Length: 385
Image (tube, rainbow, N blue to C red; front, side, top):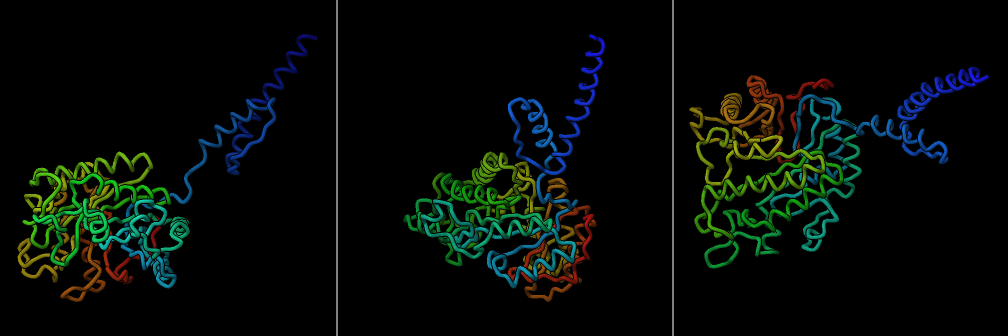
């Protein structure tokens, strides 16, 4: 009799050992996350819950091997007409990344519900349904980057002039276009931008791209007065420390971080008077994006008489120089898809992309201030890219 009971017990145990994993697998596969069990089944519920949690994968995961993106202004992102054009590009070309402006140098901020932004009336509803638009892009497998113009900020610098760069007489300093700048040494200026960055991550952006992470370059910069003694060493150290603080606040949220830098920083021997040293800055970011626009190079840069007419050479030499300083995995240049002094079409755009590939750099971004891109310069959709 005892042996018979023992046999029955073994049979029940055998079925339980196979039943529990089967139940767990079934629940995980159907993504059931709420399990209601009576107290007597709590042990089984715990096992199933653990299995479900470990099998759930993030929704809309970016599945592409390389980043090939375009810049989108807030106004283009908020326009239904523009969205259709942009989505057509994403769905029919190699493009897979959107860099969306969420704060421009005029000081406008395009994300709502940030206390300090709203208090200073800096919010502008250019993308009224921004969270829904982010969801739409992610559903289509698009990687989404939030671009923030950091220290060049004509609005908050004037509204909170204690954060601004000053003239010797205490008035607000402005560049040659009458744009005011935040003082990069002022940590309250850091916090203002990082609050915006944190909110961007919270609503779904995958990455924060900091632009104008530098000191002013145009205008009478000798008149600039800062909140601490200014020097080349202090300037470059301050920008690095800002990026360290960005890491401390954004990395726990799972965000990647990138920076835009002057194109010539890839080969310049110093900080170019703006504090940007890409070797030191690159240590604290996931990607560095030098703005390698051939139209912005002067005659005989890199020994080229007319750089604007030689897009392949300009990009090739700039990237070649960058790779002596930073890893190809961190390098993700901005390329020119606009005309300035010389007509750019598919050949000029594709030549720049090819210059990246010839340097074994696979990631790139295209810039057009009007967000109108040359589809003919892009390859057809390839899900393996």
